[in-house]
Structures are given as C-alpha cells and as structure tokens.
Length: 401
Image (tube, rainbow, N blue to C red; front, side, top):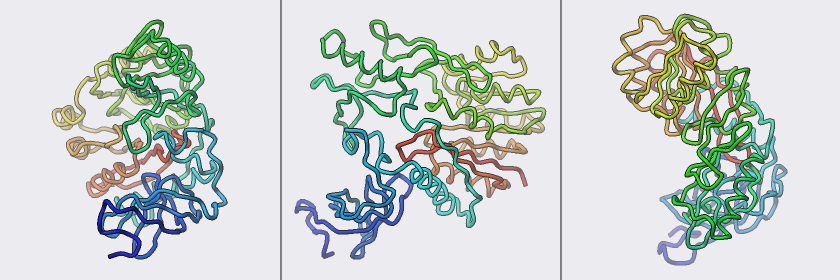
C-alpha cells in the first residue's frame, strides 16, 4: 500500500506536503510526492502546500489545498469572497502576469503533447484591457428551494448564492441584483433553473424573459462594424478584445472566396466580406444565422451569403463545389470540430486556414489531422478573453503545403 494513500476508499484521506511545479491544461497545479503525480486545484506555481488527497487513480492523485506553507511569489489574495467555493474563477490566486504566462504554457503543452509539435512557434498573448468586469455573458443557476441565485459550486451542482460577481460587466451585475431582489420578494420564480443573460452596448437580453427583462435584441460596435444579436445567439463574452481578435484572424488576407464555418452572427463574416469577392458563412443555429443575414444587410454587404446547416453536412455536400477557396475560418464550440468537418476541410483544400479555439486541447487534437493532411502551422496567437480563469482563446493560422 502506498504510504500516503489508503487502500480503502472510505477511510480518511491522507495529506502530503508538496511543491507546485507548474500549471497544467485544465488549470490544475502539478506536483510529485512519494511516487504519486498530483493534480492540485487553486494553486500557484512555486507554492509549497499541504494538500489533502481527494481521490486516487493508479499513480495519479487529485488533491486540494489544506493550508499554504510557503506562498509563491506570484500568489495574490483573491479579492472575491466566493473564490474557492464558486466554480467560476480558478485563477484569482495568480497575479495577472502569472495568469498570462500560465495560459501560454497551457497552449504550448497541448501543442507539444497532443499535436506532437516538437517546437511550437512563439506564442504572443494579448492581455485583456479589463482584468475584471469584462464578462458580457452569464449563465446563472437558480435553486427554487433555497432561492439561491449564482453559479454552481466547484465540483457540484449546488448553487453558490452570489450577490456580486467581480468579472461581470456592470450592466449584468445590475441585472443580477434586480433578479435577486425580485426573487427575495417572491415576485419572480424562474421557470428554468438556468438563466442566461447577455449585455449589448445599451441593453441586456435575458432568457427566459420576465417582467421588464426581455429576450431583447442588443447590439455592439466592433472594429467599425455593428452586430445585432440576443441571448439565444452566441457572441464572444469579452468585447474589448474582439477588435484585436478579428485583426489577428483575418489580417492581410485578400482573395476571391472565403468560407466562415460556425459563423454565428457574422463576427468574422462582415470583415471577410470587405476583403473577399465571395464569402459563405455556415451556422447551425437558425437564430444566429438570422442575425448574421441581418447584420450583412445593415452593412450593405451583398457579396456574402449565410447558410443555416450543420457544418459537417454542408461541407459533405459542397466541398467539391468550389474550385479554389483562398481562405477558410472556423470558430467551433469548445469541443472542437467534428471529424466530418475536418474531413470536409481537407477535401475542400483551402489555401489558408484560421482556426479560432477556446480550448487548446481540442485545437491541438484537430491540428494533428490538419497537419497530417498537408497543412503547415504558420503562427499561434493567444487572447486572454477569460481573465481570472484558466480558459484562453487561441488563433492558429495554417497554410497549404
């Protein structure tokens, strides 16, 4: 039996003193002790901590901090009173420079370990203009029995009752306060246990609607384009970084034909339509694709069309219809591109590709297929769209070899 871990799972868990070596994908800290590889949550690289082992799988243990023996130089006091209990933020214990370094290291780790890129390119990370009060979209959880409104507690489906959220934009914080006030007065009981909200420049869109809070159409001006959307259509949450994201993804690209996969409400479709003669955007959500068409019409861009379809299905039916695609952009959900999508891209054979990803692991997984399919990785850039969390937006640019 390992000296630090009981064979019997019901026995009291053991503790170990460890030093945190670095931050891994998923945001956990890495440590080694007594033959175990430990994954420790809510730590900083360089921390010396006493940890409690929560569970063991072979020689891998998952642990949590019991107390800090020696704090890392990059450790700071988390300002949020819910930190550690709320499941939202997991990087508040790191100063901002350390957060950025950890995210670059996470991307590099995924490119090396998953995509088997021995020497990943240099990765520049674009810092968020706002480290706090940046988040323009929220999913709040409601417990009708306790009347708690907030976010799930870490590792559970219990609702952490949150009065003030340090990462919300002011408009959403006001909405959260108004919701809490009405719930406290028994004047509102949400029909759904999950309440979604998104803030535009002048209004908030809420789902499900109630009282004066409706599923409004909102708007946001980004890089000289105006985008209309609502809570039921995906739009990036950190609006202050979108100008830089669009520039990195589409800069200096010109040509005849561009394809925009998972185009949403047209965040990239509109600027592409100003640089390419023909643009086709593909989007599964009818709500989002409807907004994309309207945004193109408002911008008087008649050289782009939006197709409402599953991306893999559209590629299967149309990849052979284009003789030469100059540029293809994809911005898939967190779980990455489906196999059928990657296969369709390889069949279409665009000259250049920009892959926008919110998960470095699924990005690396999909890059393996693109690289073995005849593409070269030209550059990787990171955008800190999610300060105070381990999440990061990555743009990989590729070209046909």
